[in-house]
Length: 193
Image (tube, rainbow, N blue to C red):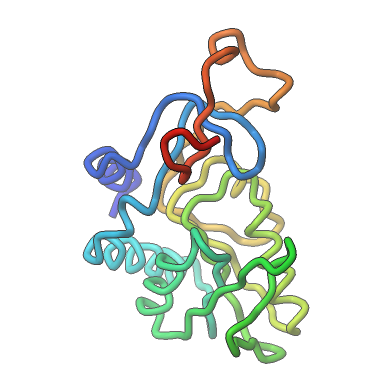
């Protein structure tokens, strides 16, 4: 699966959106990738997970467990785990902090791959890395379907299937063409901010 074919799939499924968006980081952007619109199709999720797993293997990373942050990384993390033949677990927020729950555990010394759907700032990826490190694991790499730029700043090996770099802006530094344009918070319902 090439970077062009990944982005073509996003366009085909209506998952590459343009407008004025407020990202989970608080930054504003003119583009958004709604991975859920792709990953709702099991064949697409499986193909992306297999391609990402192959890229991780080709990079020479040996993995014992895939760890993803909930919600965005859940499905793709599961599919990468399937492709690599390893467990796939997730961390979720409790009082604002990512943590392992539901009986999930990582044993000291296990080799962990952190998997996300999209990496924009890298914040949730790095928080997930900390979860694995606190368990005594070794994080061998991070991976995502799409790198929006945050993957370029990882302090660990990182692989993605494609890049999609839209400009992002701090709320107090919006360009003229976005000022006064209502911002959409992806995942919200019409009328919600």
